[in-house]
Image (cartoon, rainbow, N blue to C red; front, side, top):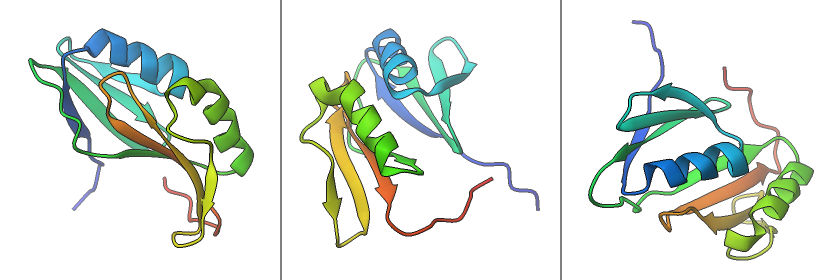
Length: 120
């Protein structure tokens, strides 16, 4: 059986505002615009938002980077919505920080201390 991937969708009242945030601040690419739903790509991750009457904020989106410096760079871009500066987390062997998107959804940006496998 061929495996093609998956997409995680979230409901939002602010589709246009989220588009601006994820494309212009986070660096995701609009992968598919279906009108009321937009799907974004960030490296190997696909995630989407659909215009609805309620925001869905119960999940955590995590973006990971190959270097600590890249986490620091994205932190500088998102410092105004970050909960705290990047820090080491020895339990999970990561360097990371949390921020909030325009829907107040928790998002994480991290670097793994250990070498990770390339995901294709």
